[in-house]
Length: 145
Image (cartoon, rainbow, N blue to C red; front, side):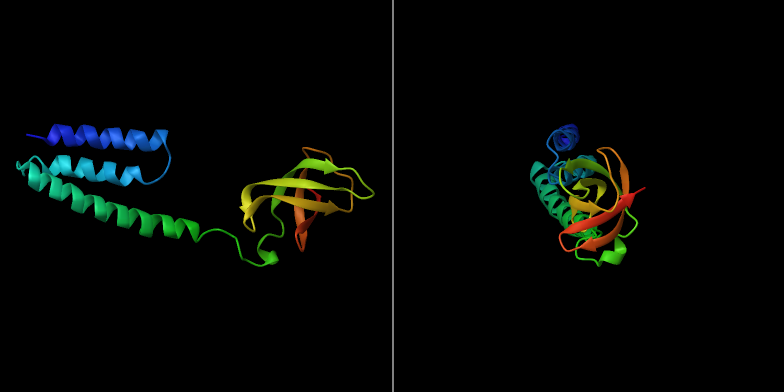
């Protein structure tokens, strides 16, 4: 009797997740959709609510601890410099001075950050592609790609 309401609630929660990307609401939307399917057989609203609560807890736990925890572990933060040598980025800022220096931006975070200050042995311009050749403390040494 209430299965249509559960399905509508599930769709609304999943759409809300798209609008407000928190990666939390989606698990409750999935639980509501599954409760809507289960409501085809279970007609008591109290039992349906209990099913929703259990499925919400399960989907949240599986999603949060199973999916998100593993996704964060794939970061390169904390790895040695050898893991980033050869990565390419684009020069975003050039600082005036005696030697070429500035900021380089990477499309994927390198050692935990997507922007790094750099030095180079050759003249670089904004928009040039460059390759990491060394890590010098808090700066990168790059060359033109």
